[in-house]
Amino acid sequence: MLVHNATILTMNEKNAILEDGAIYVEGDIIRDVGHSQEILAQYPDSALLDARGKILIPGLINAHMHLYSTFARGIVLKDEPPENFLQILKQRWWRLDKALDGEAVYLSAIIPLVQAIRCGTTTIIDHHSSPSAIERSLDIIADLFEQIGTRGILCYEVSDRNGKDVCNRAIEENVRFLERCVKSRSPLLRGLFGLHASFTLGDETLKRCVDAACPFNTGFHVHCAEAASDLEYARKNYGKTVVERFADAGILGPKTIAAHCVHITDRDIAILEKTQTNVVHNPRSNMNNGVGCAPVLKMLKRGVRVGLGTDGMSASMWNEVKVANLLHKHQRGDPRPGSAESSKMLFKNNALIASDIFGTPIGVIEEGAMADFILVDYCPPTPMTPENLTGHILFGIADAPVDTTVVGGKILMREKKLVGIDEEAICARAREVAKEVWRRF
Image (cartoon, rainbow, N blue to C red; front, top):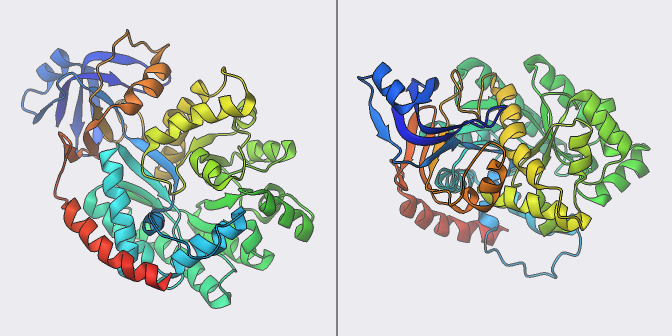
């Protein structure tokens, strides 16, 4: 494939912009990047895709997602509205995940994957839970990623809250899926070891998970100090902060994702920086749950790699980056911070997190990177340069329609039309299954 006549936003270290640019894709790799005339002359026999002047930008990466949250949309709670985060978990999420069966797991995943294609998200780092349907639940989701063609990093949530048997099966599901990843080495799939949160995991379970993950040389994907109650529980029961407890247990490290990190101390930040642990900020979810604002600016300043995720709120990373920009201005009462940091989280740090896990460059338009990119229907009304690119992203490109989505050189959507996916039929079936899920809920 040769894509030409594009304005290429490389998102490389220099934020280089290439007018009338072209990329040549061989298999699932970008093999050449340059001006259209040069690339067309060099590869005259290639299948052509005319970008028609649209913006070509790397596919977006969602660094913390819950695909299984789909059927929460529109659900009505009959009891009193939850007043705090723990009540939200007990009244909504822990009831929903128990109500999922195999078909609900399938539909919960395919719908946000389709939405991701529509909004230009090409890689999702997911955190799954379905206590009534654990065995091979990750295969259901993984098979969907491969069939549809999106890129995924999957795990199953281990927790003590549902008893020893469910905990054992959750550990086994992580191990089994990691074994699959080693054997198949799919270009679209990788695995992490999933953990729920400190307050639902005892020391014995943490040790068992560390031992089980060790042979795979992988990291963990865990909720970390999302609410103040998580920090309070850790201090009361273990005499440590959540971050200190995870560090002592051997959970933290350069391959681990610690989602949220809202209620952390300066010492915690130093530990995260020293262990090179990846933190993922989820501003919309944190605001929606009323748990607070993570000290993202302080973490970034201290050298912690902070990425950006949606935590199941939606598949749209465009919405997330816009909120991330505004939240920290509002929180500080200062219009200066947020813009550069939110863009860095989405385009630089998410790319580094995914690239490290996959072992190949993702989230950048350059020779040797994976051919994951989107065409966005944006015509800049003012000059667009590497210096002012963040402004165009936050106040223009983020609101523009995605025209084409490509993952690994495979076109998943062209001219806003999905390829090989009957979205209406999928949603029709989901509405029927949702009724049964809600009944069980």
